[in-house]
Image (cartoon, helix red, strand yellow):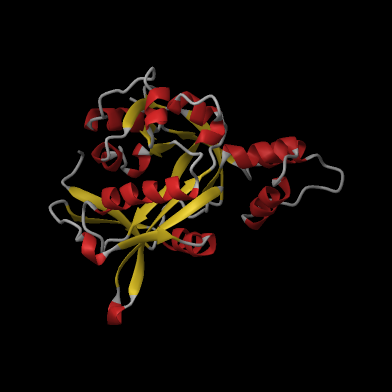
Length: 271
């Protein structure tokens, strides 16, 4: 662990709670929530305000004021950027057998071990709602102070780090590789991805301008700016016996330490 405190987010700002606090399961409930509810919660509080391509959203409900339950956390299970994310880290040949834990967020009111309590129950709901899914892949971003302590507490298999890559940003937001691919290849959903870029400040494509050429123009004019993204820590959760068999041949490495996190953030060329 990098700290004895647990990181939380509220109003898109980092907060910390004491590491020795323990959640009282009798006071919390975990249930499915509508995507509109999850989208608003993520936009209000998560450091990545954009709602991902989601399959299922799960809420953590705690004791609110006047005896009413309050939404204190969100987990979003989503579609990977490519099918290779699932096949590479789970061992399944069929990408539909896995999904990605795209967002995990608890408010500062939740005790320090709240994420592990929440995630374990969210996995159960995922299995009930999507029985074809046997494994979940998740990533921790060291640039935001995350190394995956929650995933280690849940005995997730640590697969190592992703390769460092260059991402494109606009108005302080990172465009997902999947969204850019939809635009370049005119895939389903490309119009919505274009609209999002326009809302963030990009000019609309010309009447006869191919979206691929439009993206190139946005980059050459400095509207889309490249930024180096540090490697992400990668974890996999096998939710069934079959998933455990599928992943037996894949590496299960020692969990990352502080030195690993600092090295990922700095990078070999930045010393």
